[in-house]
Length: 432
Image (tube, rainbow, N blue to C red):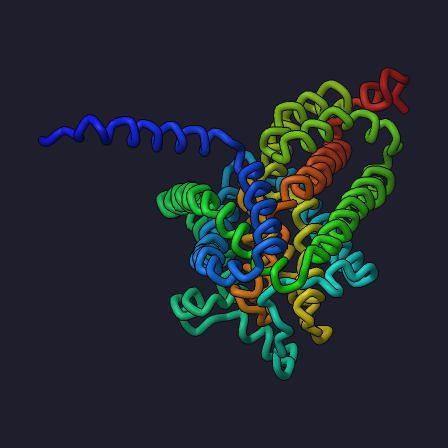
């Protein structure tokens, strides 16, 4: 084997050092750098922006490539994960039922805030143009379309409602098969882990895609495009606050029949960790300590409900996907029929249940929701590129609502199961 000439070694070493330093920088910081550079190029050298369009196109194509398989694999894996015997029975049924209710409410809340405050109105997404969706389908046609004639064709066309239907059906069938279904469940768990790794790899392209998309957007529309992002951030903050204080407060006060203030005081530590890490999984150890030591939840309950909630209790993501769907439709100038909003509600709820535990995964699920009402992945990718540079802060905010949901459902289930120490819950006061 021929060795490299001595003159090439310093260059090779320099490239390796640069690569190691580049990957050592957190992705969100690299995305912000791409945003800043794209803003600079768009303002100072707008004529160069079209020459960079191919980078944005690569980013768009990568997202388009991943959406259908991610939705199919992660939702199937999520359903099969519920087949663990420890998660079945009355406790599991109550847990899943409560999470389903809070998730639906969270999506509806996000959509309502978006409809009332119009954060996407006037947003300029560069190449994005209003798109007519054609004549709306009847409810019967929409329901029939959920069942595909050919799942391969549905995957190829990105028919998200059909893909989600088959994924849920396959997951339920796998659980129902019992021992015979375990190999298939293991396959989808493995496939889900592989898909998440692919997402991690693809996300490394994000700084370059954001750079190109922002440069083109700013060159076409000026720096005013960022006004709508700030408005969106305020809507996310409002939605997370309402979900925690109103929805989870009602769950504790009316369903569990417990005073709300002790609950809110007890969960502060977990919410702070959720905000700082932007990860429900990373919050899990602190949430377990809070549930046992401060809320008085019995160990059999919090050891079962909290891990399940970390997987499916995504109130913050659900609220965000509902809100971002409205933002996207407003920015793209798309009007939906009433049935279209029902589809957004249904699809966003299922997408939130299947959202992968990786940063900004909800943005990939947004494509599934919008595709269900006829919005092309190319247009959705423009929204993703527009929002992604700021998504870290938005992710931190919405994770707070997800952590609160997990603890609220855990406390409510414990109350229903008779596994709640009222003296501990009340902070040492005598129980009722």
